[in-house]
Image (cartoon, rainbow, N blue to C red):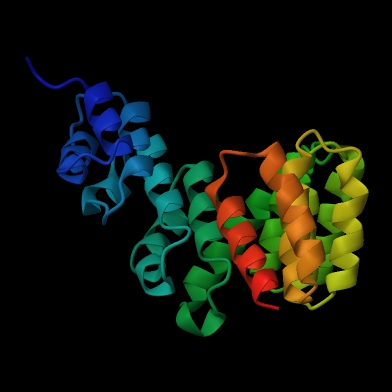
Length: 251
C-alpha cells in the first residue's frame, strides 16, 4: 500500500534515515491536504523544494516562508522578497517578518515598500488583539528585530501585567536585560515571577544562568539545583548544574 503521510511525519520526528527525502516527496504531492504538506515543511530539516514557495495553497506558501525565519540572511533574501507581493495577507506578513531585520541597503525600493506594508499589516493584526499577552509578545519580538529595544520592553511589560502567571514575556524581557548587561534588573524581574509562575523551574534555571554570568557560583548552583528538582527531565539544566558544581569543587 502507499505510505500514509502519518508514517512519513513519524519517521521525521523519530530521526529515521531517509526521512528528509520522504518529507520532500510529501511536500510536493498535491494530492495531500495542504495542512499535511505545511506540517511536512515544518518538520523538514534540510532545504525546502523550490515549488513550496509557489504552491497553489497559501497555507503551504506561508509555512515555507515561516520555515526560513531563523535561516541565514542570504537564504531569506533569496526566497522571501517574492512573497512580499503575495495576494494572501498571511503569506505577506510571514515574508515581511522574515525580512524585518534585513538592512534597507540589501533590498530594492519596491521590496522595502512591500516589506513595510506587510509589517504594517502584522502590527494591525496584533493591535486588534492587544488585550492578549501573546499579541504583546509578538509585537515585542518584532520591535527587537527592528532594533528598537525600548519599544520591545514596553510590550513585554504589558504582557507580564496581563498574564503574570506565564513565563514567556518575563523570560523574553530578562533576555533583553541580560543582553544589555542589566544583570541585576534581570535577576529582580525573574525573582519577582517565581511566586506567581505556573512553571517556576524555568525561572530558577534563568536565575542560575544570570548568576553564572555574574560569577556568583554558589547562587548559580542553588538556582540550578532548584530548577533540576522542578524539571528533572531537562538535560540543559543538568549540564549547567554539573558544570557549576565542578567549578565549585575546583575552587
